[in-house]
Length: 292
Image (tube, rainbow, N blue to C red; front, side):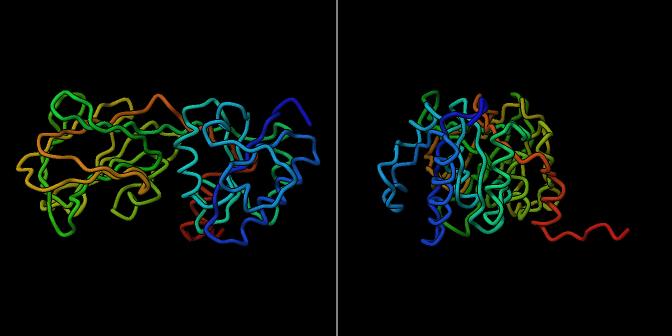
């Protein structure tokens, strides 16, 4: 054991039962190295371990120095949104499909983790979005998003009409199927499918992307992440849904409006020392490599 990490949490509920093997191997390996390991409550029952320390995700956030997420990007998003409120570092072992956020390959994860636990890693702070809905001046809902916020009619094949204000200045009005407000982290996800740009995670920016707008001149807009985004709706005779990372959703009613800005919370994501963002884009998006 060393000075970099003491208490380590293992979290992430995988989609497939055989993925629990990774949890068990990881747990036994960390224990053999002398680390104090805390297992998330809901997965400890699946592993048949000998009296493991268990805790809720929030308790892990309070007491651990590092969390290892075993699963796909969905597991990482769900975990990181909660743990972003705590001073804790997060790394992921990919047991999903793409693995944009979960760096480590399960086939050689322990070797990579060994270097990370010895302090040989890259720390990256990813900002989140804070989403609030108001009924006049009263706060009605609040959430956070790591990837994106999607605002759309709750009923499919409907359009909504709204105005967007940036830092209290009118930006544009629109009639469309909705709007996506994305972080650089989310720019390779749903925002990319909607025609948005890929934004390096080192750039302090937010991208606003229209969803099937009625006007052909509507285009994605990139703004500073310190900006305040205010969305007002009109002719609101239908329910509108707000989705955060495709995991948390709520609806808003007549006379409500939405405010989105950079959250005070951040995701303290760590990578192996050989991590390269552009290599990840090449491999995950199947881009051509250099011919020369």
